[in-house]
Image (spheres, each protein chain N blue to C red):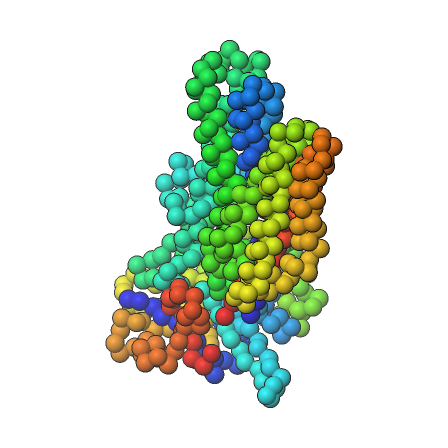
Length: 276
Length: 231
């Protein structure tokens, strides 16, 4: 008997989209800092603080014990935390991203310049920036790993899901700077969006020839306007960013973020079990 | 002691006394007794349910497949539980520490049998404060909604934690002797049976040893303590 997932839906799709944006925004923050663009570096790192915090807020509102949930998931605060659960590593990664982004952003803010003394050392900032970028990329991949790891839902239990999550992070994180008209992100935005569309199309095809529940999910997703709107928008984003100049990159940025949300929603809402 | 649960599909008449007994034992809101509810996993939101399987060909037929937590050997729910709330007793019973569970739903996603559910607090609070609000009209003639305090135990139903079958582990006194779950106690046709795999004279365990009772989905390779006759 095939039963569709109703446990993780719209709020989780929104949460994971915020994480996707934050993940590569942190990478771009570091890259902009290396180019000496302080304001853009600050923007990227502030996004890497606020968006994961917002994502955690959405997640906590979904839980049954909001006051204690955050503490129980972190292994530092709960000795019984299960280290074989990706959620533990994801929560730890998100907290680390917020912490590292705060360390990176503080010296870039004029009022905090004197307090954040590590900002005077270029090598210290480089180390923090690289760590922040690495954790950012992990957070992007985590949003796929958390789904792909468990076997209950065959549509999610696939190696293509974490890869899709990585490309979605690339598209959405670059999309933010695309909206600001930054031409530097053009290639990443185009590549991330195109690869997101391609990977999801391949994933749907592979699922359609997989186990019964995966085939059900693929058939349902393929006929869902959410899916094909997401895929088409991702392709438009890629073309727009690749061919256009500044307005094209701006449009590409908007389309990429919307596409990432829709594809994530499609992936989540079409997960299904095949119960005995 | 290794408790094992055997369900004989051929004996089940779909009366759902087991569902009622479980709901009463653990203080759940009893909404699943209406005949219109075909007992699909995750829709009934109870620890145990009876699915009505109807077929038109080759001849019209109806079977009743009751289900519960399989208490897997290789436990997908335990592996993904972030807080360590899901754990296994020395007897192999999979339980949830209700204080540690945050209701993230990861275990529900991971369970390939649909044996766990998450209470939606707004629904349950409403049922608790106004027990007959939604269900009474439709279910009045079948008894409506019932909500009562559970038999005191730390694995009883709570609105702030994921819920699942415990094999009525609270009935185990710790003396090494097999207990009887509430659903087995009330089953009028002995479709539900409970035994001990470590007891060579146990007739229920013997059904498993002889291969007469089989797991529902051996392809999932989770192992487990629930076996079916006639599935």
